[in-house]
Amino acid sequence: MASWAVVVPSCRPESLAGFLDAWTPYLSGCAELFVVHDAEPWTGIPDDPAFPRRTDAIRSWGFVRARRSGAERVLSLDDDVRPVEGVDLLAEYDRAFDEGAPCSPHLSVGALTGTGLEMRGFPLGSRPRCPVAFQVGGWLGVPDLDARTQLAAPEARVVDHARAVLPVPRGVLTTVCAMNLAVRADRLVWLWQLPLLDGARYLRWHDIWAGILAKRCADAAGEAVLVNGRALVYHSRASDPTLNAAREASGYPVNERIWDGLPPAGQLRNTVPRGTYGALTDEFARLVREFGDGDYADHLLRARDSWLRWIGGPVGALVVARNEEETSWLAEVPTSWTVSVVQKGRDLPNVGREASSYLWWIEREIADGEVDPSEVYAFVQARPWDHGFTWPGLASMIDVRGFVPFDRNVMVCQGDGQPHHGGLPLDRLFVEWQIGTAPPERYAFHGGAQFAVDGATLLRHSAERYAELRRVVETHPVGPWVMERFWAYLWP
Image (cartoon, rainbow, N blue to C red; front, side):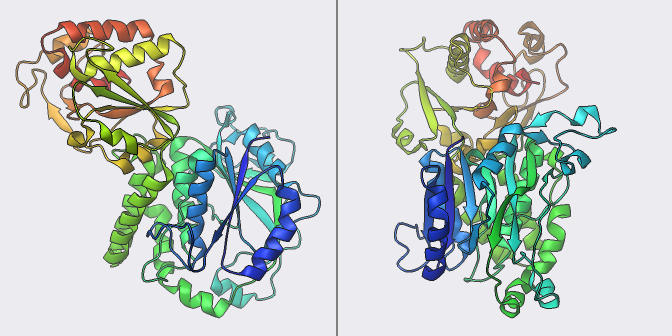
């Protein structure tokens, strides 16, 4: 069984006491519980717009604590949900995580049969199982309704939830409620509960909109999202529909536009510089601004940058090419990153600038079998701030696929290096160094050569290939400047 953390926010002592009485016997010994007390004096909770108070969106602080605990999977619950007799909640979630699921644009009717098999006609190319990013669990009792529906059907109750584990097709929206939600810890960054403004603006939309962004991120990453009707809880409390109607009113126009207004998943791969989540929140802020709410858009982006700093990045390596630069800033690198400093004059001669340092590190790690296909590897100079590096940019590299530069500014030059560095024999060396078979018409590159790349992409070439490339970079008079323009083409 994977290691679990459970996050529950609460501002109601009586409800929390009932929650603990009901869940502690089940969770004891199999999960670490993080209760986020949403009440004065908010002990241990940062006074930060990323974690709004007097709302269950403060559960994002619990996500940070769960991420730091080292748990592999995180379960988000509300304090008014209770166990369902006969349902082993964590086991049901574990089973679905472990089995994986298709990440396909097609509806899996086979998932409704309970056989685990796809039915006749389901495309063979859509059947391979992909990693599961997160799962939305089911519930009995009080349904999670918007205020308009709640007022129209005040006595509605869920008495029998479909016991199916259904992959949500890629490109299809599903609503996501945080009161019973299981997520891989390395995907928590996608499920930030969006902030409020003035204490209440867009209250009751934070988890819904967080789920929309997370679903689009999962689609872009090629990972599955499940509705798990076997992972059931009992929801015991209905909130005030009249009060909810007032709270929800401002959000309906925005909610109608979000899914279709965001860029398609296919356009989000290798987005710079903040990764898929940063790009989506930028676009979401743009949509809100179009509705005339620039204040909230600005607040959202400031809080988003803080969230990315708190949640940290993926487990990976930060490779720093150093000569004599001051590097005290390395003490601030999140602990989820392993820092490797490649020191000129110690590890290798002071030739080839940052390019030879990067290639030396890659060559050695691949030769030693240390490159993990699932991890992320970031390469920066010892003064990274000069070339587009930011802390939020580092944290957002969780969803890297392929080559992703830190710097958002794309530079373009000709085959002779003009207009930035005339005299570079780019077209000739592109072929001689076997970067590709035919030079591009123009070279798009990012000044400073700072980027992240996933391990699977690094492993497309052998250690010997990187060693040979390092040799030509170090021995050619303009090798480092040529390589600065070739990085994006090395891993097509």
